[in-house]
Length: 309
Image 1: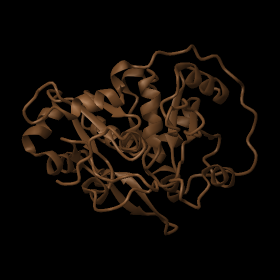
Image 2: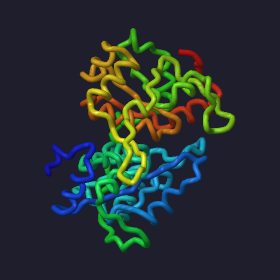
Image 3: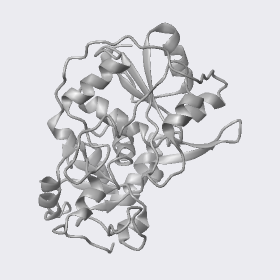
């Protein structure tokens, strides 16, 4: 497989075949909301794809002035993590999570933003792998041979800062070609301000001129052979239809063809990765991610918050 044709998502069968042909670095990037009783690291030790390692997105991250978690890591932090995982710049990295599709797209966004194009997400994650009767392992991990990973450069256009979002919020994307179109991956109720945010004391609502596109509209639920329900990406046409429903036919076409740039946002920068990956599957190139997302925006008292459609 050449650098130019490494797919964004792969199936369990493809991963199984790849693993037989060449060395593949497999990462479990499972992450759950802070109020969830599930512990992703404990689940990883009890059940994982053979040879996988655990990528803690809260640890492989930069510190933030507001205490926000899983922010994009500095270049040196990313390189050090790759070295500890035994990953080289030429390694094909395959990332999965246990809900099927939830946090793994965010991890893929990180790898691709640092120029590691040989990286993919396992569609359906661990449940899809198990459903196809493929092997799993548990218990302590085998030692990993540490590699050398040259410190990469973060693509400047992959992230948006708070200052950029505030400036952009003053531009109407329907009338100004210089404005990014902001897609909000949170639930419709949180976007409208009718439902509360998971973080106590944080106002719900949305950034002015942003559009609501809940991340689950890019996904569909599948029931595995063992009865486990998990998420997979919809076919590309259905993803496009969801985009059209959110922003209209004309704007959707302009986004797809690169005329209008897009920024994905969510609650804390995690599920915005699902919108990013879904649009990438459509061939959208001009797409960035607001790393702080709603938590960082709404925590600042100077931010303008809207609570309507």
